[in-house]
Every structure is written in structure tokens, then in C-alpha cells.
Length: 478
Image (cartoon, rainbow, N blue to C red; front, side, top):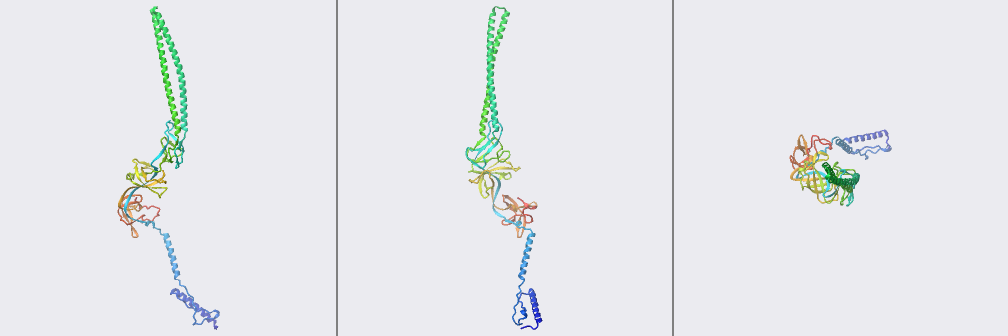
């Protein structure tokens, strides 16, 4: 039906819209409900007052509020987590355990073969320089057969020595020939002088005999001449004998010198063969260390006669040579069990027993004020991965202590001059003084102050610090 009063219709429609808005505002304060509204008719027509009208549904704002509160909570938690430092690491704990405690000494060392062929620098019988320069070394780690060249030394000094001995020998032999010629001439001259003296003596004797009938004065003069000739004759004979004896002695001395020079030359020539050293048997090349530098020998190094250059080890039976600190060596005894791990193969473990403990210590390489003692460990069995010179870490089982309490070493601290641990008590930690016993590389015995099953902190729970930085007032005791 056409509305005769469009203005009233418009007012009605406006009133309906206002009622919708009013009801919607109320729905935000009260419980949600469906609001009925009279909607304007299209083209100026409106529905009858009693006719059912379609009312729009207004959605609730509660889910949006819940979502908004959740987002604000997450933001606040993230901000708190960013501003407040985390202390998860400070609350790491471990339980106090009771059981058998292994007292061990942990040291490092190197592998060596129990049996090996040693190749040393030759001791030169001919003398010369006391040191030799290495000219060639077979590559380390290679397996060689018997007769293979292993090491050779610079031959320059030995060649010079040979040349000098040869020259000395030539000069001495020339002197010998000259001496022989001179002695021959001297001997001939002495014999001639002897013959002349003998003739003079005979003539003097004849003249003396002829003076029997002469005056006493002439007889006396004749006898004196005879005596003089006799003395000359005897002197000539003695001269021949002396020259012969002296000549033989001089020749003998020179011949002795020549013989010595020849022997020295023979030794020098023989030593030339010693500067080239070949393998006496099959083996693995392992360089030895220099006596002066402690480093492995290399080409150009100077070595003394008798100094080890190369070892050809027998890999079927290996040993570990450890350097044990002087504070621990008193605990190490023969036949103690040892566990050995290779740095190159950390997953492989080997067992063995202490074979010997040195009685004299040596200065530690990187700290001469500390003394270390050599301990040799005999390994059980053989393995292809075991090579001389490999670095090893060994745990020597010194003793076992039954039924004791132990904690990790890092859980024990020193604070205010006391040895303490931090025992967990609910959400906090109690500082407790303890007494300690023997230790190994990871754990330490606690003889007083804690009970089995109690949990102790692995770091100081009262310190807010960078985990990478050590605490200042509460530091590890051991």
C-alpha cells in the first residue's frame, strides 16, 4: 500500500535504524543476543507491523579480546626472556654416587716398538771430523727391504782426509828412498875410510919393525906413529858399524811411519764405505730425534758417531712411552693395568701393563722446572693402526677404593678458604663444606659433607656470569 506520508515513513525508518544502533551498543555490555529491527521497504513500501522481519546477527567481541590478550602475553614473555639473563647452565646438577672408585694417573706419550733394528751414524775409524752431515734420508713411514739405502753422509771431509793421507804417504816413501841412497853412499865412504886406516896401520907397523936398530928416539917415534895408525883404524871400523846401525834405525823409523800412514789411508778408504748405510733387514722407516734440538733428524743435520738415525721397528709388539710427572710417579708400579687411547683413533682403546718406571727424572720439555719420569707400558696384542711415534693418552690404574662417595671434580669449589659443594634443596642450593679424598681425571672422593643421592651443582649457582668465564670468588678446588 502506498504510504501517503513519505515523511513519516522516513522518520519510521530512521527510528528503526536508531533502535538497531542502540541495541547493538547494549549487546557489547550485556550478553549477546539477536536484535530485531524494522528495516525500510524498498521503493517506498514498508512491511506490515505484525509481519516477521529479518534481523542482522551481531558477532561477539570476546574471541578478539582473548586473542589480543594472548598476543600481549607472548610479547611480554619474550621481552622478559630477552631482558632477564638465563641461568640454565648454573643449575646443572649431578647426584652423589657411591661405589668403587678408580684412582688413576693420566699422562700422554708416544708409541714405540719393543724390538727394532737401529741404524746409527758410523764411528769413523780414520778420525777426521767428529760429526757427519746427513746428505740423504729414506722417506719416513716407508717400508724397505734388506739392502735398501737408508742414509748417506756428506763425503767431502772423508775425501779430503784420504787425499791428505795419500800425500803424506807419497812424501814419506820418497824420503825413504832418499835416505836409502844417502845411507848407501855414507856406508861406502865409511868402508873406504876403514880400508885406508887399515893400510896406514899396517904401514906403520912395518915401519916400527924396521926401527929395531935405530936410536931409541926414532924407535919411540915409530911406535907413536903405529899407535896413531892403530887408533885411526879402530875408529874407522867403529864408524862403519855406527853408520850401519844409525842407517838401519832411521830407515826403520821411516818405514814405521809409512806403515802407519798406509794403515790410516786404508781406514779412511774403508770409512768411505761407512758413509753409505743400507738396511740390515726389512722394516718401517722411523726417524730418531736429535740429541741437541730434540726434533726429528732431517737432511743437513750434523750427527755424532754412534748417534741413532733411523729405527726399523717390529710392529708386532708395541709399547707406549709415557712421561709421568714427579708428583704422580710414586703411585706408578710395575704390572699396573693401563688403558691407552690413540689421538688419531679416539674410538680405539688398547690395554697393557706397566713394564718399567725410570728411577731418574728429566726436565720437562716445555717446563724445565718440572721433572718427569719415563714409564714404559707393554701393550697387549697388535693392531695395524699402531705405528711408532703416534701420540697416546694413557690411564694408569693405580688402585681401587670400594664403597666411597664421589662427585665430579667441577662440582667442588674453594670459597673463603673452605672446600665446598652446593647441594640442591628444593629450588635453591645450600653451601656445604666437604672433606676430600683421592681423585682421578674426572671424579674426586668426598669423605665428609654429603650423602648418597644428594644432587650437587656443577657450577656456582649464586653467580650470574658468562658461562665461558670462571667465577672469581668461588673457584674449582681441584
